[in-house]
Structures are given as structure tokens and as C-alpha cells.
Length: 103
Image 1 (cartoon, helix red, strand yellow):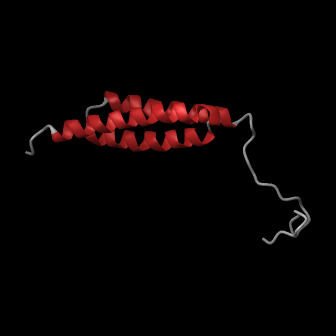
Image 2: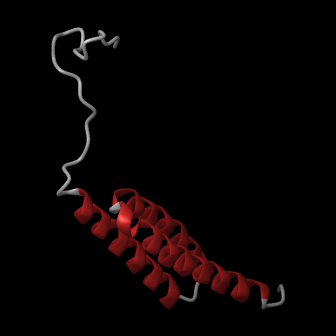
């Protein structure tokens, strides 16, 4: 769609980027971050490497979405905590898989 120079669309409606409500984004951030850290807790409790790897991938996706919606003031601290949690889960999986001799 080509926009005229005065900011209106061709059909006459005002064009605005669609965004979330400012009151909704902190709740979305809290929801996705809680889900991500909950998945990481599940990954620490399980012993199967497949579940640990799946938990790491799912938690990473959820934490990224949580960081997208988080207020800028908290993004750095949340990013440090989430990277440390996912990294420790990955290292636990690597330690368990590399420490055993192949069958």
C-alpha cells in the first residue's frame, strides 16, 4: 500500500503502526519469563538428555519473547539471569553426555 505524503492511506483512514497496549506489555513479559524459567526448572529436574535439550530450546524461545516485551529498565538484568540459567542447563547436558563412555 502506498501512503500519501500527508500520512493518510489511500482509502482515507489514518495510518498508525499497530502495537500492544502499554499496560499489556509488562504482563506479557512476566508471563513469558515465568514460563521460560519454569521450563528451565523442568529441565533441571529431568535426567533424560532429550528432555533437557527440548527444555533448553523451549525455554530460550520463551525467554526471548519475555525479553522482547520487558521494559527497557529490566532487560539487561533479565538477560543476564536467563543466559546464566540456559547456559548452566546446556553445560549440565554436555557434562552428562560427554562423561559416559559410548556403548
